[in-house]
Amino acid sequence: MEAKIINPFLEAAVNVLTTMAMVDPTPGKAFVKKDFAAMGDISGIIGITGQAQGSMSISFSGPCILSIVGNLFGVPVGEINEEVRDAVGELTNMICGDARRRLEAENISLQAGTPTVVDGKNHTITHVNRGPRLAVPFETPSGGFVIEVAFNA
Amino acid sequence: MEAKIINPFLEAAVNVLTTMAMVDPTPGKAFVKKDFAAMGDISGIIGITGQAQGSMSISFSGPCILSIVGNLFGVPVGEINEEVRDAVGELTNMICGDARRRLEAENISLQAGTPTVVDGKNHTITHVNRGPRLAVPFETPSGGFVIEVAFNA
Image (cartoon, rainbow over all chains, first blue to last red):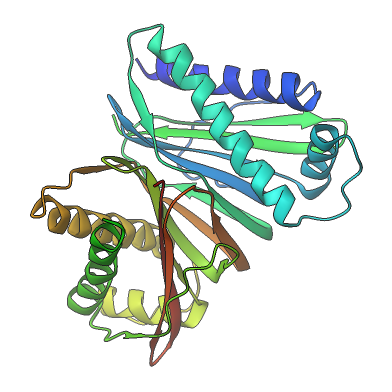
């Protein structure tokens, strides 16, 4: 059940970033330990309910998100501003929606809250939950991002 | 409907912090405008689904959360560490649970994801939603915190 819920979020993130932002992210070593805190310069966070309660976050380095949003907009973006924050919120929504559709096909029904975007140099994200938790760092030519998915057992 | 959903979260935050952490927060001027971004040194975020989809955050200044967690633990706490992050996650859960119980009494049923805690000096929190959004700053003798509640219409 655990991998069955978590893996679709990773697949969805790669799918959304590849198709929407034309980046080809390379996954790194996954972390399952509880004391890992994803670090980034901007993060999208969304809460999940339904057959499992949890949260998903995606944390980007500054250069990585500027490159991704530059691809999305078709023009270079020089700094993290309101448009970049909105784009991170939308990407978070799209990844969560894609994952939920994949899970529906497995008869697992999840609902999602609305996304929250955190903007702050080198912040860390800690998911507070009682069940499985997986963090996967990805690399792109412009820098890294980390996806983290956590659920109550 | 909007105030009916949002106000119980504010009442719950004051109730939880007053009874659990023995602080007596003073509310300041509420913000409803979309471009307000709450700022803090540590934040708890939780996603909400059910009759409305949304998110709630509570962002504390460093001195404020250290005083609150010191009251909770009964011993002074000198820095934001794992125990402080866990306490912020638990406070977020308790505030959301208290608010949901108040709303159940009004026949409004909401579900909650699991909390996520952001740790980073002077980060900002932006809620990405299509409906009402309210931010209320509070002051305590040890510093301030901001509660923000956002829902899709």
